[in-house]
Amino acid sequence: MSGVEILGYAAGAITCLTFLPQVIKTYKSKSAKDVSLMMFVIAAVNEAMWIVYGALLNNWVIILTNAVVLSFSLIMIGLKFRYNHD
Image (cartoon, rainbow, N blue to C red; front, side, top):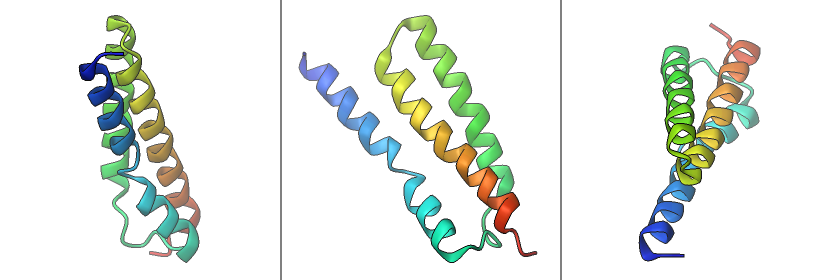
């Protein structure tokens, strides 16, 4: 594995963690009042597009990273509907 690939996987791993704190906080607090639904919808569409792009390039770093972030976005959308107390 080259240094560029290692950098890509490391950056991908860190990117995967971007929505995790919000998922955990929302799940623990059982509240999504201050969470922006539109932000996570936009993120989900964006991640889906990145997955298609990665697939067209056959780039597993892009595919896997964005698949994880997409799953967190979809979880947050689900939590928003479940715990929204507006």
